[in-house]
Length: 314
Image (tube, rainbow, N blue to C red):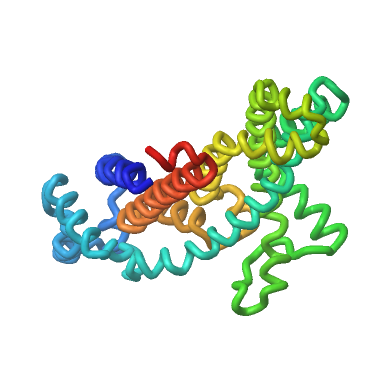
């Protein structure tokens, strides 16, 4: 187990280095100059030169990259070019918001996708199977922003059941925070649940054709016991892989949903930073997102070992 974990860590280091180079290099291709925006309308030459020197923008790009990597290695992601607030402070403020949204969306995805996938596979070719597939295809086809707008119009404007937008921290009012996050979490969770249903169905169908499942049925075990205790347990490894990828997508891809529901999370932070040419914030957010992907995949590897005893001996 330790060897597997160590191998994954060895792969994670060059991955982070490559991602950091891509982040830094591709960002330089963005149009516009943040220093000119910071210098104000007069754009005094001395002020511009001072700002370039302060943020090392007068150095060659490779030197800028090495200076940035040096600071990142010491836990310093720089400061916002627009507000001069440390990027670590901005991330610490916004990341818990997106994490709350991602966790609640994953609860919806698990509650929708896994039961629907199991039922669909267990009743292959039946009306339940066709109905589950239609719902899954609908969930993957409907744009998140459209579903979010429709929910706001129906649930908030017409029925007055939930807040239409905004965010309340759980530390201020837990119940109001949950109510505020229910609609955006459902919007994200429905799309992910549809994907999870398809993967769960595929994994279950593969396992249900195995010899040991036929043996379990021949022994007279109850159908529900065979499906849940034997088939589903052995189908979990590909499902865990999909869950890790989907959770990483939630942390990185909730931009449209956060914009629709005016949630001040990671997505809104990076969109505002791109529009404002705030290089330091974009670099920090994307780097933390990449690190989150790696951590989630490491957690998935640990779950593989816990679910499959044969991997513990490797």
